[in-house]
Length: 415
Ligand SMILES: [Zn+2]
Ligand SMILES: [Zn+2]
Image 1 (cartoon, rainbow, N blue to C red):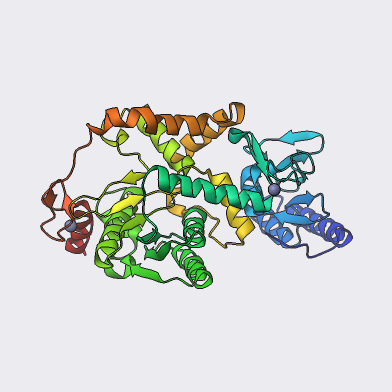
Image 2 (cartoon, rainbow, N blue to C red):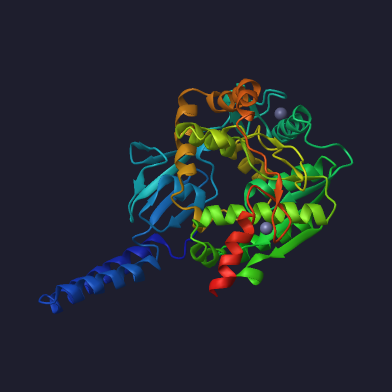
């Protein structure tokens, strides 16, 4: 986000000066096209410092932001921490959808959609969020109540844990896990956080800071495990192990979640997976008919020999609702997506489901809930359980050496 540094008249004068400068350079380098292009790039960068050639975003409140372009509407809103469903984005007379690209130099205007129109279902006050799949809207206070009720309902419906169980919450520094930690603590459960440092450049440091801030605010212990110190940055480990970044990251996280839970005597491991995560995973596995995974997309993975119980208490809530809750509770979290997950197929499935949801509210919820109610039992027989123990670390595995040890062993042999 960029603050307004100069008045528009100063900007205009700077622009004229800069254009004159470009013309002058163009004239000098008329025979040298490459130099001229470089000079223009340089000046464009310079102009950006003065908010010229930036995207101007005007809010109805009179607030003005400058964002570097070209950029998708969705990315602009994310950058400004504004929820997609809460504003109309207008350029001149044109209404822009979240996937539209906005060029440098353009001006767009944000018009709030929820202003006096929607009323809270409980108290009739002005709503801050509409929830079409429940045909409801809520004010700040009643939304937080609705949110907690959905979490409690998931915990009870799926017998996730009891009042006095010790819950290990896996926190990444993103909104889902930090909201989960916050809401479970608010509901009075015994929680502690676990953060695993994977050594992702430009990401891990910031996400760890967010996790620490939450620990401080909640006055709960945060357990930190530094994988990158033991084995090196996850990117290198994945490359040397011949695995994709996301698959290596998943293997490492699963290993530590279970290890720390066993060592620390926790009853259950809770992760921040939400309705969007679960529904998109289900869709992805269905599209490829991956039978071995289909029976495992459940809000609870029961305890078995050497494996702690794993639960997903946010499985009834969408990303949009979780982001709203984080905002209302003032929870700071890392907004950027993990740089390693860019272009992952799960984002594509999420977008597809969101498009369907927009036209037919409730589809996402129904797709996942009906699967849990009627389909998962028929599929669970297809799941193979691991009965052996890893010869290196002792964790349950279906092979001689577990996937974590294979990943990190190969790494240590090469290096
Ligand atoms: Zn209300
Ligand atoms: Zn192992």
